[in-house]
Image (cartoon, rainbow, N blue to C red):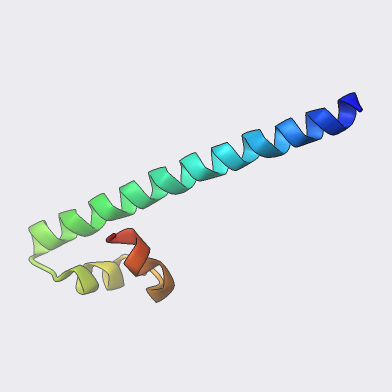
Length: 63
């Protein structure tokens, strides 16, 4: 029983860590896109192309 509880807690902690890493990555990518747009006068799409951000992640990134 204790082992099962520890596994559930471990899974929850891992899910929270993964969510925090995803949020930090998204914010970092968003900042990079905005910096390229400002510094190099690129459109958002051009900046995301330069950063090789997959099409599938672009809408969520700029939301």
